[in-house]
Image (cartoon, rainbow, N blue to C red; front, side, top):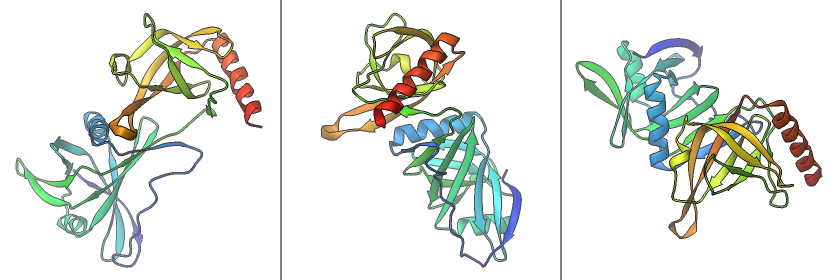
Amino acid sequence: MLTYQTNHAEPHYKYIPEPIIIDNTHNSYAITNQDDIRKKLNQLFSKNTLLSIKVPGKFATSTLLTTITGIEGNYIFLDGFQNERFNKDLLMQSTVVASANFEGIAIGFILSELNGHDINGTFNLKAPLPHNMDWVQRRDARRVKVPITIPVKIQYKNQAECFNVTDISVAGLSYINQSDNQQPTIIGGLHTDCNIILPDKSILLACLEIVNNITIPLKHSKQVNRIGCEIKQASYRLDTALQRLINQIDFHYQ
């Protein structure tokens, strides 16, 4: 059930949604693929993640907290609010901004065409799936883009194929997968004894956890997947080597 959080005195219906993107010190990805958006929303649904929604009222703007109660077809359902006035104010909006913090990732999306919907005698909110979603991962370590002149590759255990790393830090990396084989890239998958292949061809062992898998459309109906990984329990040798690599890349951009 939606809960009331705070009130801030503001004129009626002059609410301007706050920007969803936080700032450029974060690694931000706007997800536009509907299948990817549905997967992300299902993650929030499965974890019963609280969503924050700001709704302008007659005398104040209310911050409401709700959860996703279901995703069916192209629609999302949110838990309704006990106070009829809040539900009325919410349904009068042409759009509402929903935001959440999911395991250190700031999430934001805009819902439109809200309608009331009864589920087992309980008031719910029904809206089409959002057209896009901001998925902003906060970084505890500085991440650099890997230039093509300083190639870094990643290789899974017992896999012959190598993938080009696009950006890297001591805490994580991302790479591009252009193959049809997506088996190793299940979100939440933990992969031990992966090879990080440095520009000098030296190989470092790493344990990687897949944290996101974003589809990037290309020309001529082609698409690639950008896979984000967290480096788990990095050894001293791995941490030191990655620090040297990042310094090398910094020098390249100077």
